[in-house]
Structure formats: C-alpha cells, structure tokens
Length: 429
Image (cartoon, rainbow, N blue to C red):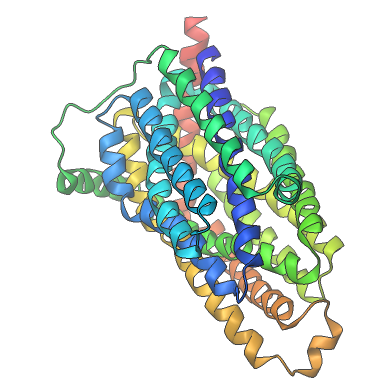
C-alpha cells in the first residue's frame, strides 16, 4: 500500500488549496451587495451538475486510459480555472457567473481525477484492505474538514482572497509535479473500443443481474438529495445566525465527525450487510436533523453536524468498499460513471431548488409570529423547516428499504466476495 499512501498525500496537498479557495469564495459571494441564497446555491449547482452530466463519458474513458495521466491532466485543468479567477479578481472583474463557469469546468476535471484514483485503488489495495484504505482517505478528508473551515475565513480576512488563490495555485503545482515523477501503476483496462451505447448496455446488464443494486441506487438518490440540502444550506444558515469566524469554527468542529467516522472504520476489515447498515445510518440521520426544528442554535447545529458527518463518513466508506469489492476492476470506471449520473443528479437538483425554496419560504414567513421563537431571521427559520421535512422523509423511507429482500441478497453476495479475497490472501501468505 506504499504507493497508495503517496497518491493520497499528493491529492490531499492539491485538495487543501482547492478547499481553501472554495470556502473563501463562498464567503466572498455572500459578502457581495444583493447576494441571495439562490445566487450562492447556484454556484454549488454549477460545481456539481457538469460532472454528473459527463459522468458516463468520463467513466468510459477511465476504464480505457492511463490513470496517472488522467489525474495529472485533470488537476492541470482545474488549476487553470483558479488562475483565471485569480486574474479576474485582480482586474476587479470577478462576478458570481464567472465562478459558476469555472466551477463547471473544474467539476469535470475533478471527476477525471477522482474517478481515476477510485479505479486505481483496486490495483493498489487488496479487497480485504479496501475498508482500511477508504478509512485512510476519510481521515485525510476529516483533518481537512477540521482545519480548512477555521483557516479559510481567517486567511480571507487577513490576506484577502487573491492570496488564497495563490495558495491554491502553489498546492496543485506541487501535486502535479509529484505525480509526474511518480511511477505508473498497472490497472486492468478494457480492450473494447469506446462506445457509450455499449458501455451503458453492459452496466445495465450487470445491475439487472444483481437486482439489489436498483434499490441501492434508488435510496442513494434520495439520500444524496437530502445531503445536498444539508451541505448547501449550512453556510447561509450559520451566516444568518453569526459571522464568518463562527462559521469557520463550527465547520471545523463538524469536521471532527469525518475524522471520528474514519477512525472507527479503520479498525474494520469487512462488515456483514453493509447496505442495510448504510440505510439504517441515513434513517438515524433523518431523525437527528428533525431536532433542529425545536429550535436549532449554533451549539445544537455543531453537535448534530459532528454526528451527521461521522455517520455519512461511515456510510461512504462502506459503500465505496462494497462497490470496489463487487464490481470487476476493468468496468469499475463505467459502473461509477453510470451510477454517478443517476445518483449524482440529486445533488445539483437539491442545490438548485434549495435556494429557491428557502427564498420563497423566507418571503412567506417574513412576518410570521413563529419566527420570534427562532434565532436569526426568516432565512434561518425557512432552512430549519426544510431540514425537518427532509429528515422525516428520509427516516420513513429507510424503514422500507432496509429490510427489502433484494438488499439482503446483495449483501450476501458482498460477504461471499470478501471471504474469497480473504482466503486468497491467506494462501499467498
């Protein structure tokens, strides 16, 4: 796993700069005169939607191209976007729609990077160590989720967003240079010529033969929409209740959840019934989020955020290791691309509609007598209400999906694949 550690290290360096910039840009957009939740959430939409639209095409290329080169070129394309935004801001020309365009290009570039890394993991790590590998990635993300939200607002105030852009440019440059000198890895590729139609037919056949995937994908779409709402609305909620410094501190504490979830999973080699556990975790999340309507405060938001992120991290590790175990290596990119199109569209939809819904609810409840019982303005009240409704929906649906026979069947298939891998490792030792 030594080369896997190097890959993670280089990607983390690049991500640190990107996340610093993304967080600072979120504050910058909301600081602009006349800024609305819709204008802010629209940037999230453009950051996610293009990657989803092109996910099938990207997945097909990932199964055919050199993974290291895809990671390098993807980072270069994203880095050029940061340089463009830096230049526009320096000329005092930067406006939100510029960020939307660059975010769209960056989302496709990042899709190449992380799809290539996801597929390459199978060649760098044995099936029995996939949960450990995914936990390591989660711990790295967790550390960034703790530090970035605290550091970014401070840097934004002290050195300005232009210097934050420069940090991003330096970080991706270090990562690209590192990958250039890093040796290539041998990853199984399909020898079939590129045909999106045939690739889609292949993945559809694979899913139909394992019917439980259909139910997993349906629930994943719903849960992705739920998580999208939480992600995009947390920043305007916190800024309505406080300021940029409190925003950074809260996000930093919430980031502990990702680290805690990863540490918990790092002790595991394999887990029976991963999908039933994932669905149960989301049901628990839904119930917890409903408590924000009682009403929520900065402290309750922070505590609930830590719990939610730890559960999301555990669920993500379980799903990624499950997918990498079940799906053949030479079609993993195409599978991720096609399922990413179906599930991934939920995120952009939630980003797009959340701002519109909150702005409408804010206008509707602006003069409501109930707002006086809640901190903040009608914006916070509307977000609390939306969270509660979505929490109830996800909690109820989890009860239906958790015990479905097809979910149980595919969990049994996972257990068999994992047992085969463990036996192979014992023989090789």
